[in-house]
Length: 179
Image (cartoon, rainbow, N blue to C red; front, side, top):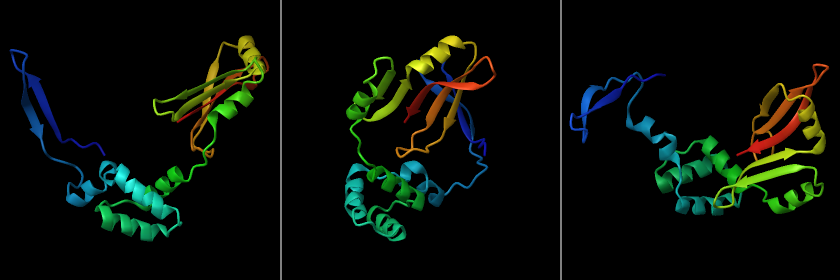
């Protein structure tokens, strides 16, 4: 749905301000309060609301009942999919990333790179072992990338880097997951 509603601006001759050049307020979709309330930004719960939901989620409530509670308590029109996403986010099984990386790093011929944001939230892991490195060194002419989408417990996509060997067979030369 390509909405043609727009506002175009131009810079004034002195270069200090913007003026409206053209305006089109004709939308090709409904513009109303209910549609606006279902926008993701309007459904998003703040930190205080999430704390309340965490306590309720601990007793594994009926999702429909929880949806009604959230709507009454916050006035936000959350969807059942939103509640499933919140549940998945709150019920994740914490894993000590450093323990996993230490196990993987026992063999010095491996390349393992973990990337986290400022809060320590995992954003990506890159892995390549000695066999993968040798395959890439042998067949660097064509590098392919394939991905699975959110099939692991962390719901992070898994990317495979592949090369084509002399027999026309694909060989994995690196694996990485990205948040």
